[in-house]
Length: 280
Image (tube, rainbow, N blue to C red; front, side, top):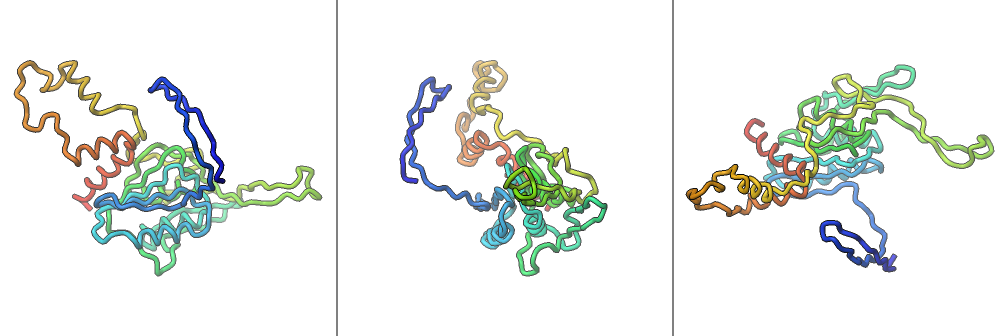
């Protein structure tokens, strides 16, 4: 930490090489972050691989403004982790009686996990429209959260089909004096996880309600300019009557375009939240 690394980066769009100096340091990535996006509360959970993630999510929602009109839970690229942490997070959005998952072990015993997985004193969020973002990097415990909220119609799932891992694994240690494999560890698969509707996620994953790629590389303004060039819009017609606001983007429209360029899935989630407000 503190030493400088000099990197040469070639950018095809610029057609040249850039020299970037980076100072090394230890970077701690927070498992849970929250952000107020105007009237929507956005919470990202990057993993469930540490104890206390669910508690941190609960604390994040304790800080949610009273005037919040919708919630976005971002589970993209969340590889999973501890099943009980994911269960507690899911239970923040469901009634106690709602089934979260069924866990069936190797000899057929079934453990049912319901919405009362959270501590009684935790805040619950059941009176706001909700969207969950997932993608092909969402796996295991994060898939369990998305599947439960989808089956109970508690949230609209947006993004790409998830990884498809729905098994429970426990870590065991290998000791050199017993196994020739040497020191180390391996995981034993002990059970399968089934979503509330009884279907398996293993090998299949969660199919979002709306399948949206994160970016399609398309610049909206360039697209509109191309339509005008091809004479496929009103403004491309000869001697058309110019509108008062033609070519002028309002601030809200500009914000939408900028976010659309950066993250189509998040922009679509915001639009869905605003649509749900009419029926929630």
